[in-house]
Image 1: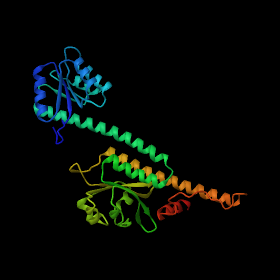
Image 2 (image 1 turned 180 degrees about the vertical axis):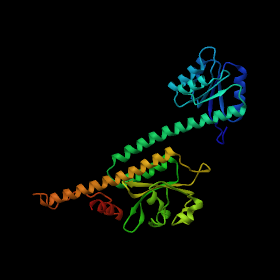
Image 3 (image 1 turned 90 degrees about the vertical axis):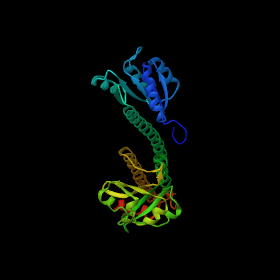
Image 4 (image 1 turned 135 degrees about the horizontal axis):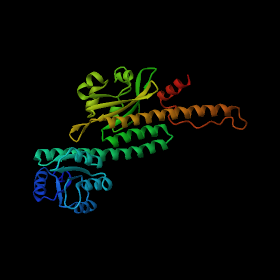
Length: 341
């Protein structure tokens, strides 16, 4: 059991040998797992239809059906459940075949308690990652639809920040736009940060992750490096920030700004990001760039319409509606001006 009193995971063991059933149950229950057992494949499939399991441990040689059939049935009908095959008839061919059918791992008999625990934990890690990836994919799809449905630049940037915080379970996120004229990064939107921290002012782009503008790659700054890499290291520490990941928002070869992800202490550990998560965060940065492109296109069309209306009979004096942010932030006007040149 874990600290909440819940089992670490639920596991179904399929094996017709009573001694194996009892041995596996004892080893795994001592480690906090909840175990169900089945002596036949049909019995196991009935249990799977009625109960959710995280992992199935199945023998290859069974009296009614092959363990391969159990692997295939789980893969087809319970894709969120992982399978590990173990057998006393270990061959390379059977291992490869079980993997092709969907097994996550393979454990020859006889096995030690340490080997059983290792293969179980490895399979659980793969199952949880697959479930998490599936959840993130759905949440990102929902966020992407919401972002695409809005024409308000402010709202799009806000949605990007809130989606990043919600998806990645981090302390906060912000979008900073690069004002090239005076080489500063200005806050365009944020989520999860205090007004005091946000109100510290613009950032000198030469003093804050300047390597992003050179490499155009993501940069991670840990708390130990705050003093040498951040303009306001003490304010970051006071905010409870332990690391800052910066993702460049690039258009062609130009860095328009930065998507920043702020990590605090989460589940007792520092937040790290794997390659898949970095790729997804890069997609969010690209959403920000597309939002800016859309805003620029809108402004350009609005100006064209205004020009036509000046000379159109009956429409003089009328004006196309402003995009809400065009006159509120210097960075928006700078971007428009850059692409008008």
